[in-house]
Image 1: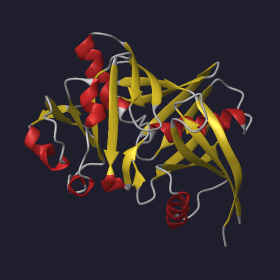
Image 2: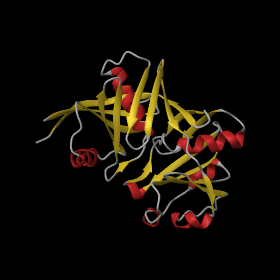
Image 3: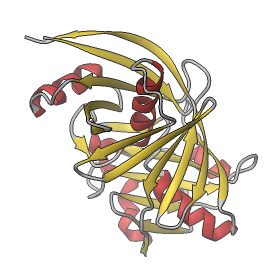
Length: 262
């Protein structure tokens, strides 16, 4: 069996920046074990699998070690491939996830905009994230559906954080978001998920379902600019839509090829 595969840099307009994701369009679903093995072989933060079903696309996301509930950059990358390589003519793509429900991506020029459910955060004590091993004291911590979000005073602190990944693996969450006000953007962040096989993710769209409502309320702004401060870096435009969030960015194609399965 041969499967098409694409690799896309998401949330960037430059090659070798943003967050790389693999996209595998399928005619029908293959075994979960095969998808997990493909994701492990790709060794990227996420591999997305999509199947066209009438007027929408079913989608699933795998890290090298686990299937996850939601992935923003791989959804953005999937939409980019559907628009640019699979001949989708409508400016809107509707995805259906068995874990996260309906997700849409719209296209305007080079910009793609995810429409995702907003996360709901509850404040928790800083002791809940004490195992992260951060040497800089945080201002506050919150728990969302999948992740912890830890708030710091300034951008310099976010850049300086050095987590203890072995300790962090013990925290019962998909990952840890750290964030602070930005200097040239409204807010900055980083995302760590060693418990999901990703020590530090370059750009995490789904984390902005937590970040956007928080910063929208704190800054009293509906539209926000954001930068994820990984080594590769990524730029996002976020919009608070109430119970949904809009997360916009661009994509660049890196490669396309074929997978050969027994």
